[in-house]
Amino acid sequence: MARFLLFIMCFTLLACGNSTVGQEDLPYLNGYWEINEVVFPDGSQKNYGINPVIDFIQLEGEQGFRKKMQPKFDGSYHTSNQTESFKLQQSHETYILSYQNNLNQWEETLIQLDSLSFTIRNEEGVQYSYKRFQPITIPK
Image (cartoon, rainbow, N blue to C red; front, side, top):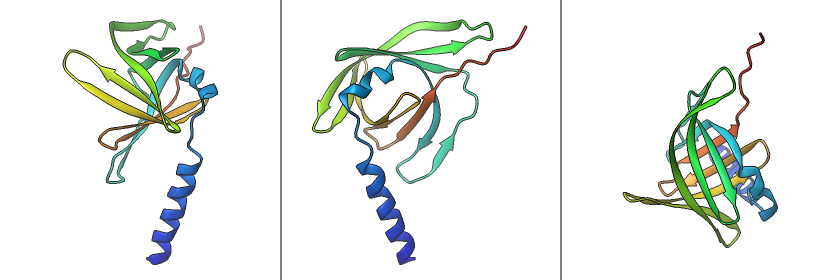
C-alpha cells in the first residue's frame, strides 16, 4: 500500500510540473472543442463519447468568449447566440479565465493547453479535459 501511495504522489508531482501554459500557447485556445473527460475532486471520472454540444472559444488579447454550439451533419452549427465572456488573467505561472454575468461569477484555471487538447480546473476542484472537435463528415 505504501508503494502505491508513493507512486501516486510521484505521478502527481510529475504531472503538475509539466503543466505550465506559456503565453505562446494561448492562441491554441481559439476554436471548437468537445469535452473528453471530467475528473471530480474525489478522483472519480466521467468519460464522454460523442457530444451533441461543443464549445466555441475565441480569445483576443485578454478578452474572450465561450459559446455552446450544436454541430450539424452538413458541417454547419446551430447556436443559441448566448455567450459567456471571460477575462484572461495571469497569476504567477498560471492563466485564469474569469467569468462574470448578471447572476454569477466564477474562475477556471488553465492547467494544460496545446493544439489538440486543453484542461481547466474550476473553483470546486473539478477538472475538465477537452479535445479539439473533429466534425463528422458523411460522404455523398
